[in-house]
Amino acid sequence: MPAINVNPTRQELTRLKTRLRTSVRGHKLLKDKRDELMKQFMDVVRENRALRKKVEEGLMKAHGSFTVASALMSTEMLEQALLYPKQSVELDMTFQNVMSVNVPVYQFKTRSDDAGEIYPYGFATTSGELDGAVEALSGVFQDMLKLAEIEKTSQLLAEEIEKTRRRVNALEYVKIPQMEEAIQYITMKLDENERANTIRLMKVKDMLLQESIEEKRQADAQAVEAFGGHLAEPMGEL
Image 1 (cartoon, rainbow, N blue to C red):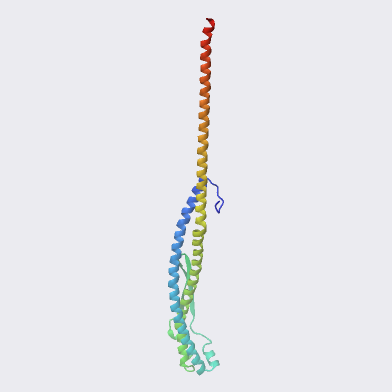
Image 2 (cartoon, rainbow, N blue to C red):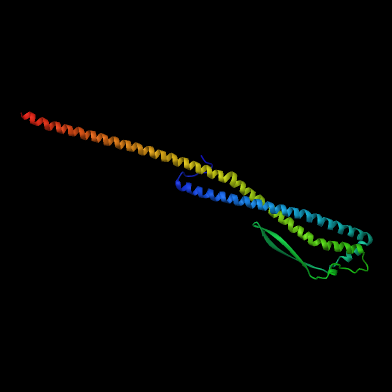
């Protein structure tokens, strides 16, 4: 018996064969999609590794400058210098379709194009190391935003790869074998029914032939009796 309940009919056989062809074609497409997703994922991972290294180096540089600046300036002066920023940033998010996966794309723009707007303080009362720290953070900000975009992309691609892999395995190891087993079962049942019908027709033919022979024998016997009685009548008169 197959793993799924099926009626051993020709209509069910045709339906299963159609589903099997569709499943095999879908299995191939899903495998191609999985392979392409893996390729895209590996490219994103390599880009993520290189960009993360760049961001970490930029943050370490900015942290070092802030450490020196905090040693040269008092905490109150440092906080007052950075309390009211002059520059503002607008962040826009759109989506890009990568192999049926909508991944985010971040874009930002500053309110002013003046590079000096990143310094919210006067230069007379602050340390030069603070200027270097603010400049380093400003430079690494765009890389941090790109890193967030790439990491979210890699996460979404990994989830889609896992879903596609499960679908491929379900088709390859469960659905397609079950349909093939059901098709084999229905084909075997139909062949058995065909052989049983053939044997039944042969038996009916033999029975009809036997009846025909018996009827012919009886007819011949009646004809012989009638012919014998006809010959006996003239001899009795003599």
